[in-house]
Structures are given as C-alpha cells and as structure tokens.
Length: 204
Image (cartoon, rainbow, N blue to C red; front, side, top):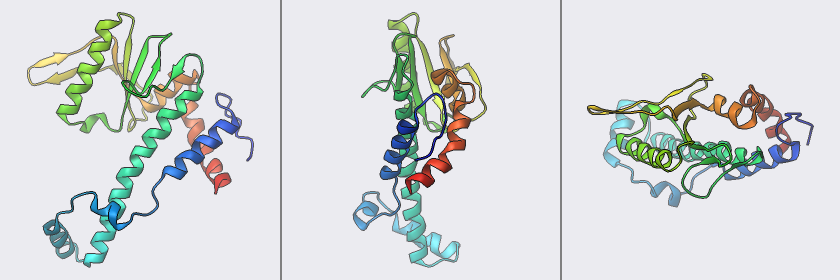
C-alpha cells in the first residue's frame, strides 16, 4: 500500500474502504442471479432480430445490464459509507437518512439521479425531508445527486401537479459539493477520483 496523502482520510481507511467495495462489485452473474429479474422473452426475440445479434449475445448484454445496475448500488454504498470516516459528528445511520450530522443539524439523502426519480419516490422523499424540517427548525436536508458533478448547491423546489413544495432548508446539491461540505476540503471529491486508480492498482 502506497501513501495516498489525501489529508482528510487516512491511507489505511481509504484502502480498506475501496477494497470492501471491490469485494461487493459484481464481475459475473450466474443463472440463479439472472433469473431473479423477470426477462421478457418477446423483448429478447425482438432485440435479437432488430439489432442483428444472436440470442446468446442478447442474453450476454442483459447480464451486463443487470450487473451494471447492481454495481451502481455498490457505488452508492461507496459514497455513503466513505462519509463515516469524516469524523466531526458525521455518521451513517442504518435507516432513515443516508448521512447525518446531528451537531450541525444536517440530514442527507443520496440519490443516483434526481432528474429521473419516479414521482412516487420523489414524493416519499419530500415527505421524509419535510417531516425532519418540521421536527427540527435548525435542520437542513440535502438531496445529494450522485450524477451531478457541477459543484452546485441550490434550493430544491419540488413541483407536483399544481403544488410547489419548497423550503430554504431543503437543498439539492451535487456529489462533489457534498464531499466539500462533509470533509471541509473544497476538492475532496476530485482528490478521491484522482487517487482511485492507484488504490485499485494496489488492491489488485
């Protein structure tokens, strides 16, 4: 293990956390795992014909799609559980919000892509956040968009049919901005990204 010199997390902790994520990562899928998701045989037949591919190639593509979906969840795990090393009151609860700092009244939910969040999940998220805001008038609820790297933080105005739900304490924030908030290092996310190839090389 080399020195990664991140400054905001120890070499040992980042190495072990990346290794733990690698062990969760799916590199293959067996028949049992493949059959856990209902596959439409009609769609498979159309895909094979329209795309000019064999059924074996279509099934292989579906396996990759299923593994990729599972691995996206592991990337969410990587981000969420990395914050437990931040100290200074940051924690990763077993239920409720994904990342919390009770001392600073910060409560965060990590979402893979806010822009394509189904309305039912979005509404449940809004209710969850407003419930916290009503219970704690100092609370700030962050919706962390894992697909946004813009470094932005803004009010999250949720429009549902004719109603708009908003609060000064309900914020939509990019993943790199949230890293800066948690670790108090403006380029913490960039430093993690830059160090990952070296850490992964050390693990393999």
